[in-house]
Amino acid sequence: MKMSITYRLFFLILCATSMAIIFLLLIMWWNINQGFYKYLGTVDQKKLAQVVADLGKKYEQQGNWDFLKHTPPRWDSSGAMPFLQPGMDHPPLPFPDENPPMGPQFTERHPDSPFVILSADKKPIHGFYPHNEDINLHPIIVRGNTVGYIGLLSPKHFLHPMQVQFLSQQKLALVLGAAGIVLIVIIISFPLARRLVKPIRAMAAATHDIASGKYNTRVSFSSTDELGQLARDFNAMALTLEKHEKERRQWVADISHELRTPVAVLQGEIEALLDGIHNITPETIRSLYAETLRLKRLVEDLYQISLSDLGALTYRKENLDLIDVLRDSMESYRAEFSRKGIALKEEISKDVKAIGFFDRERLRQLFTNLLENSLKYTDVGGTLEIRANINENFITTEFQDSKPGVSAEDMEMLFERFYRVEGSRSRGSGGAGLGLTISKKIVDAHDGIISALSSPLGGLLIRISLPIFGGRK
Image: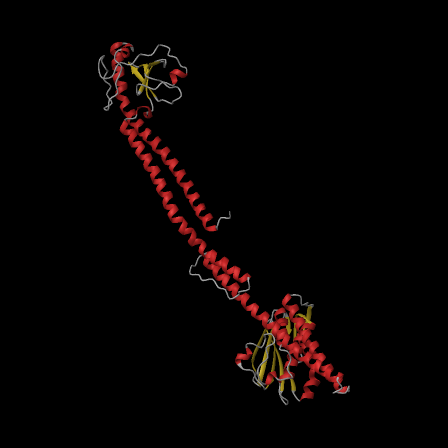
């Protein structure tokens, strides 16, 4: 069965916390045992000095250790070591043999005394001496000679019932505390996991909607952390997709609309010829040819824009003079402007040069589009002025024509695809609204800037700035 991310996150938090608690519990458990035994051992070692002194005095009086057979020493809370007499509350301990057995039976005995007394050659005299336990032996010195050794066994062998109860209570408190912490983690981690996963679930649902084509989907967010940043980026992505989808639909609608007109005209003309309504005359053929050229020009513009969008529009750049290309383009259109009665003025110094890394054909296409635009939309008897100025590492070219003008609202949309100004500049002689779009893409490919402004002559001013690396004013 597939486990949801909420439960996986919950169990991850629970397991990580539980492991940390178990590790801490083991450390504290070990520390309580070792610390408590070390404390008791330190206290007993301080008392042991008195015991060593008492044993030394007794040995000096008796001259040997035989007295331990009948009066074994007793440990009291003060550290003094009076010797038990036969018949007292603690029976005399059996004195071990001269050579006690050292096998498993001896080493596994439970000690009957908290300390062990050894002879000068370290043979057990009193008490149990486990060889698998590290015992700190203290010498018993009489008149400058070491007559024996005494050592304390670990306090864990002689815990008082109250001490055992204290240790048990501490360990129980540790276990209960650890269990309580785990319970608190369970209570807190599950709602926390759900809260952390909630925006992820919302993001997943929104992503599913986007994948289904619902580009108006948005994710609400209030945090400023990584999830909040992810939500903001997601909304930005959804907005971009929605915008692109609208542009795509508008693009298809505009293409269909632009293609419908010349195709319909061609169809009507050809049907009229087939039905005998019109005769086949040179004028009729010229009309059909004009519509064919219009359709070809539209298809070519669409193809150019498509290549530019795909990044496949080729550029063959070389070091050349932009002014030469501009003048060549102007000369090729001078007759057309004269035929329509529009004055084409050039305000460029004869000796000015602007050397840059340009594509000659694309620059010619750029200038041709701008000349065509002014030729189509400028009123008869108007003027088109072309200027060029060099400023540091840029050449600025301006195309400004006379009436009709363009409103500020329309000026912001001039470089959009298929956009044509409502009014005098979009009359039937106009194109498909792709010329300025193509011009902008050419300028962008040359790392330049193109903008539309109101012309002092009453029409439109197109300003182009392109980088150069050599020039002369």
